[in-house]
Amino acid sequence: MTPPKAEHPAAASGVEVRTVAESAGSPVQETLTVATQREASGLTTVRVDGELDMLTAPTLISVVDDELDRGCNRLLVDLRPVRFLGSSGLTALIAVARRCETDQVQLRLVADGPSVLRPLEITGLSAAFVTVSDPLDAW
Image 1 (cartoon, helix red, strand yellow):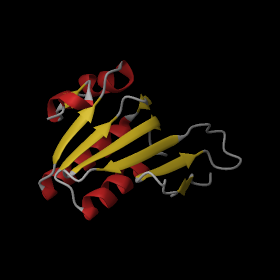
Image 2 (cartoon, rainbow, N blue to C red; image 1 turned 120 degrees about the horizontal axis):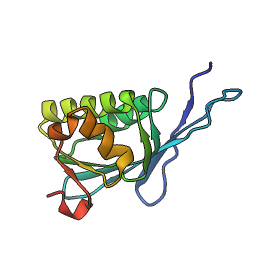
Image 3 (cartoon, one colour; image 1 turned 180 degrees about the vertical axis):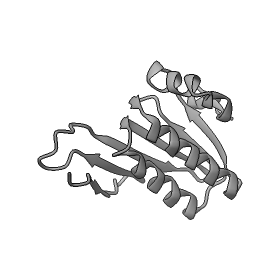
Image 4 (cartoon, rainbow, N blue to C red; image 1 turned 90 degrees about the vertical axis):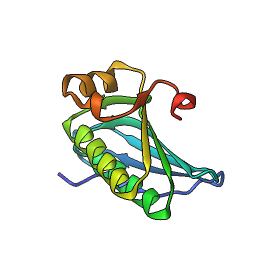
């Protein structure tokens, strides 16, 4: 199976969007879109939309690494549009948390539905993250 192709268009509004779509000829029909937005206050928001699994989790890690390399002091990962969070997605979130800890960046997850909250709860990872249902409650 050919790995999914990542696209890196930059929107004029200052939001960068990366999309992983199904590869040609693959029976996998999924898409993950990761959009980032940086604010002058040092806050970076990463909005994840789609299915976060073994095919798409590397894109999340790559986007977060790029954003942390650019420098920020707070990272908000908005998972509200995520429809599926698999074990590889959970592993990616752990990698994000470790990188944030290393870089001394405050991390918050935004999640309000069972597709994200349930996997965090049943694996015991809900205690490892500060999770809010509204981004305005993050700090």
